[in-house]
Image (tube, rainbow, N blue to C red):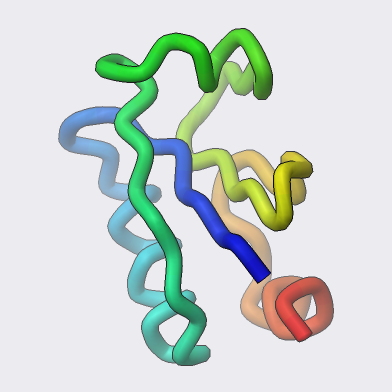
Length: 73
């Protein structure tokens, strides 16, 4: 499973999502969409964070931990 967090500089919600994934022991890559605009073309998010799992946008914003557990199994 490939997990990516679409983030922006100074995003507090992004940090919260990182903590949630760390707690679930799920590895992820951070993608700063201000530096890699091609991600915004592929995943048109209007709020950060965006959570991409296996190439599909799974969530925008902060999901509930129960939702993360379900989708990341």
